[in-house]
Length: 166
Image 1 (cartoon, helix red, strand yellow):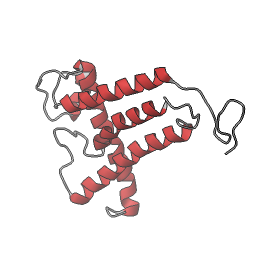
Image 2 (cartoon, rainbow, N blue to C red):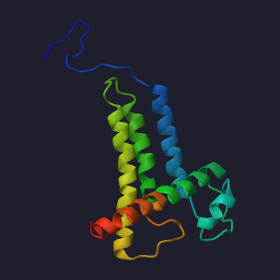
Image 3 (cartoon, rainbow, N blue to C red):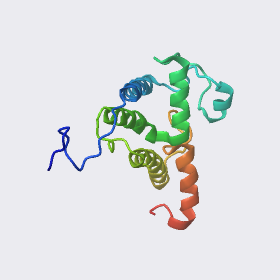
Image 4 (cartoon, rainbow, N blue to C red):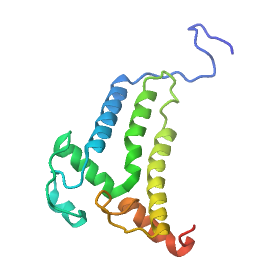
């Protein structure tokens, strides 16, 4: 490829690095991953009265490594998107690493939309798999099922059209 005066390859869109965003995403990705590894149902959380109807037990089992914030975030994400929660720290670390590149297309709107869509589609997939396997809906770790509230809602909408194999 031809080179311009600055020594950059033509044809690439050169943008700015975003080190503050990168370090923030990597920090929160690692923090959320550690909070998920330390999570057990029944840890002390914020807004316990709102989560109680969905929890299998209301007995306290201690604290999370990141305190009530980490336990609340884990409880809410398991409740809303189920097993797809595991992908959140992975995407945060990946997008954080991409923010260090100088290539402007490294972190684009398409990348963010694809990551967000991947989490939501994984939630729906696990809700469909749980229905197909006929496993109990509520478990200790996944109070709304493997797909969470989002996956179960979309699966219930798709079930009349596609049945369990669709």
